[in-house]
Length: 320
Image (cartoon, rainbow, N blue to C red; front, top):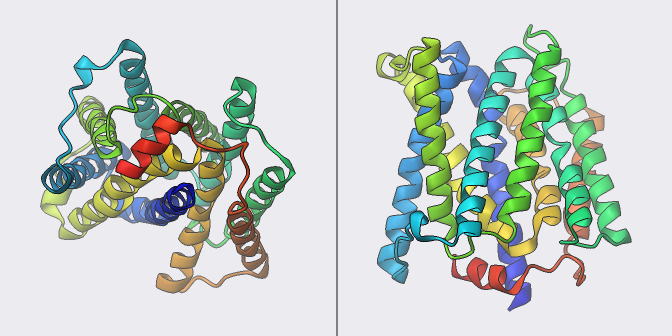
């Protein structure tokens, strides 16, 4: 049963990483189509909410899962849900504003420091123990990510300058993501993953809509341009709603550190899609980096007791 849970959680994270991997290029295309960052995040989150509502409806109909009322949660669980909602909002705002200021590659280099931060926090809090195998896997994955992303610094810049504020926002997003992963590991276990992420996405949609109005960002771009609408729909369903639910399922199933390492597949997917769809050549260092990331993912399949999920989280992961 634990092997099944671990495999399911790992596959959920790989699919989530694949969905999130498209967001950098899609965001840049959306900005070219007339979107401003806050408006794009608002539309993406709105479509994400609709996708999650569909998942919740299917879960309720097929498995009889009741809709949990977050107002009736114990205080600690309610605080945990609120914390990941704020963290998710912070990740979205910081990341997509950064994409508008500097290259996608630089933002990803800054953002994907978060798996190392998650590991440090997990050890400091006593949630997980890192043995030699997992330290090697973390090192391989981080090193591979650097090679994959750094290899595209020149080819993906598109005339966008390296902006230190954009890099700082990428690091800020990493801190928010570390908070999200750390809190998600053992809190609000009474709420199924899809319902928890529905509340997170709803806060993002409402907050970014309000910010877009305050900043004067036009919200009607998708209504005027079918291409912009398609990009927002793609980013919302395949790059927000579905992968967000799978991310939380994966974190609950296999723990924060392993989840962070597996999510480093995201930049590999992004670079591979760019090579396939945009005819951007893969450099040798990117291929080596991709091999290192995949090697880390394979290494993580080795079972150890130090990173096992908590029993309550195990039961929830199997249920969701």
